[in-house]
Length: 180
Image (cartoon, rainbow, N blue to C red; front, side, top):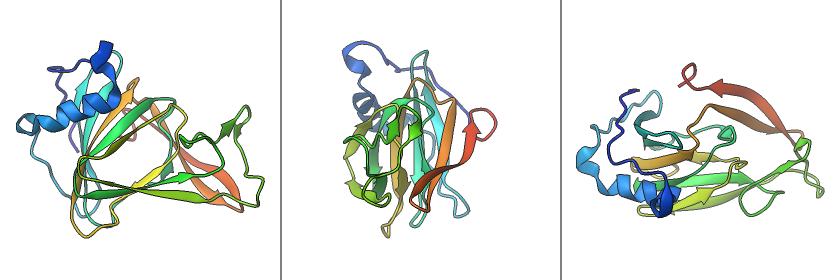
């Protein structure tokens, strides 16, 4: 993992501040990227830019690598697949953005249990997500994948979850500067 950060070319405000548009701008500038690395032990990631309102990350995924079910600590954002294919799973029971929170936190489904909805994202595809989005991402394909992620505001924490006994259960809360 690397922590090198650039502030050049980062424009999170105005019409160009759409997180998916920012991801596309960074994806188009591959010559400015650091060398993408692939690590068999764990996913590789590097922050490309940080500004007062957002940050941009570059991630690589070998086949079989993925994340736990997690949120982004109140940050909204987007991700764009630059190479390969990624599979996203979002818990059902909320709105179309994977928002599964009620006023008292994650809510249980009324139909007997949580389910995960699967979406596949190929090269050039991406999605915007809200501040309460929960998902996991995995490279379920046979080829390495690369993606660009934008978070607004910058990530401060991420909560990890699992589905146990039809409940969405918090398993850990990771903090910026400590866990990544």
